[in-house]
Amino acid sequence: MEERTSSLKLDLIQEFISQYARNEAVLPVEPYLLEQALRSYLDFIRGTDNFSILQAAYQDLRENEGGSVFFSEVVSHNRDFLEAQSAKRTWIEAERRWLYKKITIATARLERAEFLHTQLIFQWEDQLRGRNININDMPLGSANDQA
Image (cartoon, rainbow, N blue to C red):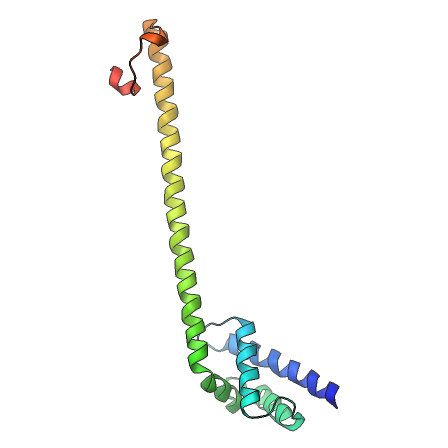
């Protein structure tokens, strides 16, 4: 019986997570947090090891999809926790996008600076060859200063 209860609990967790992922009315949250929320609710109703409660919850999820009373109760019971986790995830994703944008801009600036540096080196070499100037006679500064 204990093995059946454990197996049913795992099936219930998987079904809950998959329904949560398909439901557009809820905020996005990581699956391990959903499992934690579901276990919290089962502890709250003292249904963690009760086979008949787990079976009824699983049947409700399977038959009623997004309109499941059990689903609504779990989400409602953990609303503050789930909203906080979703907000945290949203901020982390926004920060990643911001950092990626900064890295992209910095990379573009670096590539542009390398290009300009290479151009200046070629201009400088051309001036040395064209004027037969000794390198030791060149003043410090960019090649544009020589023009």
